[in-house]
Image 1 (cartoon, rainbow, N blue to C red):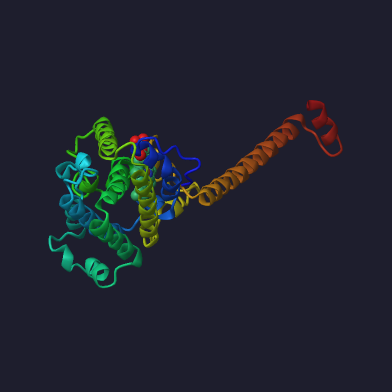
Image 2 (image 1 turned 90 degrees about the horizontal axis):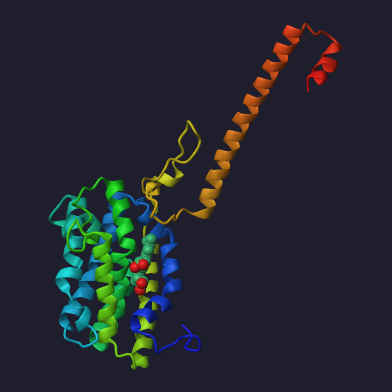
Amino acid sequence: MSSSITDWTATIATLLRDGTAVAHEKAEKSEGASWLTRGELDKEEYARFLIMLWYIYSTLEEGLDRHSSNPVLAPTYNAPLLSRAAALEADIRHILQTSDWKTHPIHREIETSPPPALTAYVSRLKAINESSPELLLSHAYVRYLGDLSGGQYIRRSIAKAYGFDSAGTDFYDFGSQAATMGDLRKIKVWYRDGMNEGVPIGDIPLKESLVNEASLAFVLNGDLFKTLRPPTNPPSLRVDPVSATPVAHPGSTSPTTPSLASPSLSLRSASLSRQSSFSFATILTLVLAASLAHFILTVGGIKGEDVLRKLFSLV
Ligand code: HEM
């Protein structure tokens, strides 16, 4: 973010939102986010993603616990409300159907050969935990406010896609299953106020470091998305053989769910469906016209060269 166009006298909540708006849009439109938001990931791949998140949240939350009295972090420190590591474990256990998930081959693979993007993310969290713990605020902001916002859309898709009732989506559950969007909005307002309380309005170098760290957090999250393995049978590519149109995606019925379909795919699908309805309409028109002509010729007793003259007189 260029300091020439940034009003560094603004609150940290405003600076973080505005300073990461472009990064957010990029993350939101990424392929990985799209698979996730549409509930398209294979169930085991979703579990692999949650295990990677477990490593990230465990490291982040260890740091927040350790530095909970740091004046920058203290106002937003509320482990019972925000901590996600235990919820992630519950979801992982539910999906993999084992309480001993650390011995599961999916976890073993991550443990023995972690994706470089995961190593980079965890290493960064560990480094700032030691050298500049106040920057943990940026990571907590990016993850928690994201989970309280877009995470709630993902929750619905995940529940539908994998047939979860309440178990399996604890990660997106802040408080109780009954928590409404209004409750979540209140938590976000409290969080933004807490950030503004912890970060002195006049401490511009700190605000600049926090915005830079939040931008880095978005990059690290984007890199993590890139490690996701493509769905083996994405619903958006399934074609209904009767209508030749794509099968409606479970998430597409919600009017509030942002559309994250790949534009090229949507256009292609739309074009395919337009082509098939055009040929059907054309055939129907031709059949009707032929029937009408046949009727006129039969009823009117028209033969030979009278045909054209009689037909034109009818128009
Ligand atoms: C997967 C697709 C995503 C969707 C559909 C989505 C959607 C949203 C929405 C609707 C908001 C606005 C909430 C409000 O008005 O209070 C929001 C805010 C936010 N999202 Fe996302 N998001 C997505 C991905 C992400 C990712 C990948 C991250 C970072 C890991 C993220 C981090 C955030 C943050 C930090 C905010 C709060 C911005 C603020 O300060 O107001 N989002 N998101």
